[in-house]
Length: 342
Ligand code: PHE
Image 1: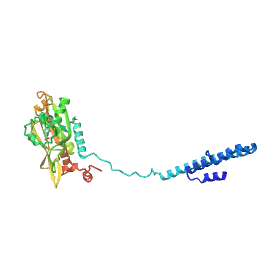
Image 2: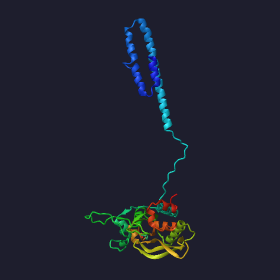
Image 3: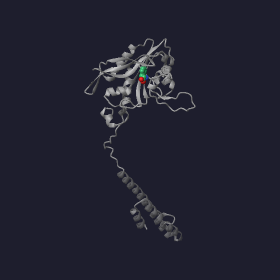
Image 4: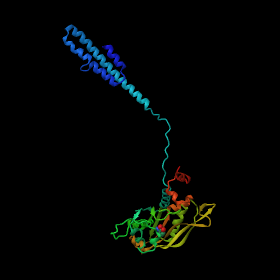
């Protein structure tokens, strides 16, 4: 019996085989258990020797079972360690990291430059009410300027008489919101997305503007000119810029001026700050008294300048990008070419 069981245990290949052997020997109907039961019919002397021998055998088998079970578990662990082995010293596989969108990068540059000049940042919603986008900016319902904006209108229940909301056509509504929120004096810029139904090489239906506004008791065109010149020098990284203020018209400014920057196109290369060409970069002017009043500010006490600049446009100029639409195509080769991605 001893040889049979100890031999079997030694050869068992897994826990199930071990369990089978345990039941066959020590289980209720196991061979050893049956022999134990037979002890009752033996003479006292026989019972003593056989009983003792059976007890020894029983504990030997028991010990062998335990030892084999532990050995099997060790072997299983070794096998797993070998199979799931991981070399932590191998170099990692590089994964390309994303980068900030070029327009956001330019927006951050613009914001930082104006922050240095003491301008706070204000924001407004992209879905704007007719009031903030038009009326408050001195563009009443029948004003011809409304047509020039190529506005996207939101759907409105036909039974609702109120004018529909619009996708804001410029960042100028933030002028009104900022005046309401902070009063005067105030110095803010408002960068953000704007929308117009337009699409060609230099126009996209969604583009970006930064609005600027400064209100004080004696803010003048001279302050506007200085602010824009300082901005252009810092943004285009040139020691000198020349700006040309061209008389223009916006309902929300009086007087109004469109501003051009001196530049040259040598061999298709754009250079800012020198040459005989002019490029329009923004619209501006002194704030119309009605606009100040719409923002809750007394135009007899306060005056201010405002400007609105196309961010995508000045980014194109700074980086020499010919097609605006490329900004929104996420073409990695394009991003790399212009240094916007590693
Ligand atoms: N909102 C004008 C536009 O989008 C730009 C502008 C802003 C002009 C502020 C004057 C003052 O064309």
